[in-house]
Image (cartoon, rainbow, N blue to C red; front, side, top):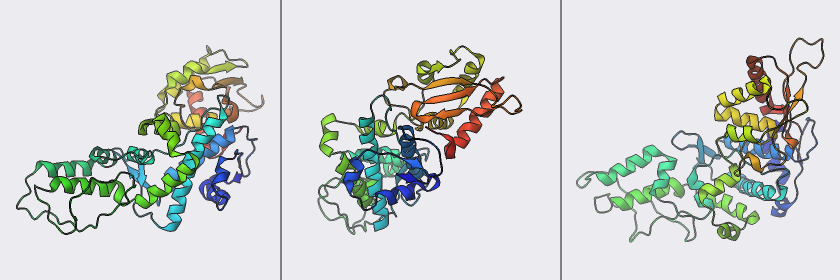
Length: 369
């Protein structure tokens, strides 16, 4: 499969369109149009990372910011047209393929991880778990506090709000609301029924406006990963998120502890010390960019870096391509082998400058197998 990096989502959807679900179970080989690199596993890993980033950052019609820091994703309630639903089906298949590909690769290639920071309630829905009021706090803390304040106040005698919703959900729909004893259309909120109102409104915010979209994801996902398999291993929502996306924080000490050195480095050189000082000074976003550049995937494995074979390793190369050069070369990466070619830089400042430049360029082009 060949895709354009800048059009990764569009090209990938087109490649799989009309081919049925069985193609998602077949081995995958990927190349980026116009880029060098044989796919020995690293390019495929990079395709998963690049495509998941395109979904999470470049598809506002599908997902919108959510969570306390607005750095997670929830389904856009306005994305219920047939073209949108087909894209959500693709997302479900893609997530399942990442799990399938990880299980087939073994230690020599390591797991696939996606840059898809979905809000926890979506992971619960994917597992078929019911949602509760506390899930709204994870999605929108402001709305959660607003609803909780209703439970604490005396609203009898107030012209508060009138229900005007015709509540409906399929009996097997995920995250279904608590049973209601009567129709909820057209009655005023009182102290007697305010709990019912709060639960219904929370359900509408969490699920009621995204049922079609979530059903598209769930049905597609389970055509590749049967629900019975997830039930067998009794995954929690956090465990499923860790399986698909890896650890969101990058443990630099774990990476440093399991990194190997070859071809002229033994780990005791000044340039190696400067390198780790730079990495430790990065925030998590820059650390993930470094992992992306170095390995083709920006996630830390759930089992830690020690579970990978081959391990991340650093190889010594000369500072200049040619003695006549006046500018030091950039680091280079071989993603299939998790190999970083680190020139023998002369200062900590030079290390930082070159690493930052390399990973910035590498987000768009440079990582090769």
